[in-house]
Image (cartoon, rainbow, N blue to C red; front, top):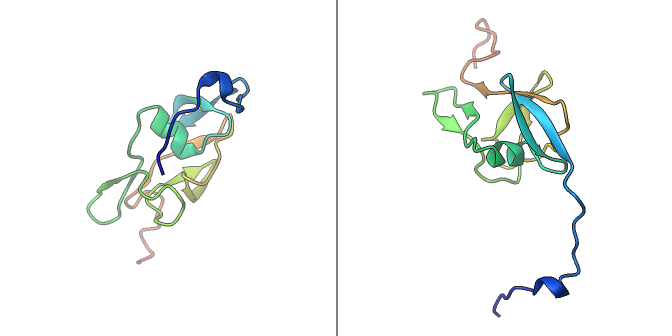
Length: 110
């Protein structure tokens, strides 16, 4: 089996016009298109990492892209541990990097 391109004049899929949206990421406006996931908006803006690990602070972003690995966790509108690859972006969303011990209670041990 081989893949081939469909000539534009025979392509039956005609997407509608893009509907832009803006989200705030760590206080900075980032633009995307309606229907994109938060991870898609971030990747489209050139951001490849938006979380760090608890141990060592290693950078993380999208790894699996299907919600299995949890590498893409962010805080969205005050809710922590949101998988950016699964959550569709909505105009006005406030997204915050998540990482290390940010937001963890120092009295609680893992």
